[in-house]
Image (tube, rainbow, N blue to C red):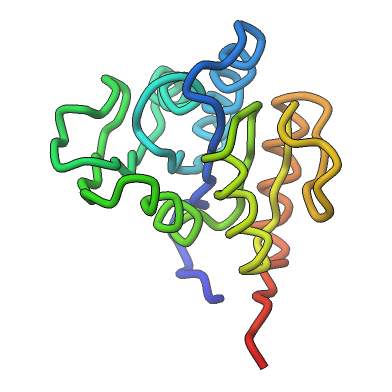
Length: 166
């Protein structure tokens, strides 16, 4: 992977479309922290964790990109600044992972699990907040601040090492 000098870090935030109240609050704080450090939030653009992270980022003056599953940009939550319309359904998860430099996973179900799997398969760091414990390669974070801190450290250290097919 290469990075373009001067571009903001692209932090993927993935997770449940129906999070707990605690999960929603954590995602809101993650979004605020990302924006406060000059990062861009990349997410699926819909409800739950995606909405909370985008909301936090926008309230902090940050940029949000939502990679949408359908054909209608209007399906994006109101905090998405740039909707990417894909008509890919769940396959959009791959676009999210490849666009982000690292992922922060908050709670989540099988869609989140697929994003975690693709990220790990491509050598990207994944930081988990109450999300799929016990998966080798997912780095547990103890708080939203810790998750964002680790994510930015990973981006700045350029620790992305893809697993190439032999």
